[in-house]
Image (cartoon, rainbow, N blue to C red):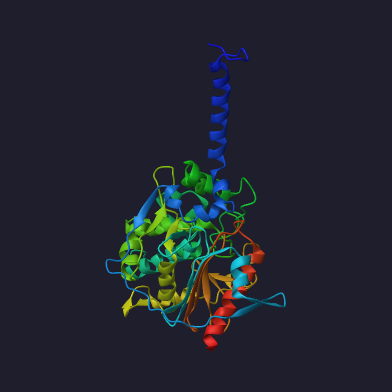
Length: 403
């Protein structure tokens, strides 16, 4: 039967279906962009398990409760000669959760995000890199990784014949592999964007990594690279014979009294793999446990978890091209780098894990301060928001140290 317009109903249905199909294709191709835009990203960063395949890292069999102690943290920070309260930091840098440890106790905990709260697992992004580093340190102590001077292809045979055949475990850990150009999210065909599309769209991240050229001799220059961290995660898996989530569960998560299951999201393409550089999701309280473990030289409740030498290495070492202020175009003047951690130098040698969109795990062992800040920035990277955040976290640690 025809319609009032004279066109059969099926004649109008076909173009509608075609439009819906085209819209679905567009959504599939642009899903990464849509998930990361404000305010949607506040939901995305707490619901990655609804968007991607995942593998669980179970909480400790006997979680250890945090001691809590009321303590004034009415600190201020000075940015561009303007003194600001910490409330400004949260409003100006889109904080979703904020937790402060001092002397091993929680002195502040707040959840400003729309979807945030205790027990909520936050997408850690590149904070994952710092956890991968801890696992590599444990694997070295166990002898699963024989030496930091081993070529990464020893543990990752699929990288033979590529630019990653020469770099060592140490060079990849320090992001000095010499492979690939500056990581630039604003260039559609950059390596990091091709990598991200392969992760979310079902492509091969191995093919992306194998295609990268060598840009400088290994071990001579810093170049921030999530792909270096992915290779490091594969080194860990090849050396231990265990998926990274399983190794994290048995060697770390089960041993530090974690309260909540964590998880790694996995690539959509098969074989599905966790991202050693960016797919850990964990609660704010459990991220604080990672920070306290590092603040206490790798010990937890009297048990050695991470080698003391590995913790010291993560705080910075005497290597000119990864020193504070020497990182070049893919770093910032206030940072150095070592073993998947950003180093801050100075008398107390504080250091921090950082993830895009404003995730921070700030560790100041000398002040006995750990700060976790999760955020939902409007863009993946923002030099001004980073400078404000690190200025405020330093000021807060100074305030608590004086107290």
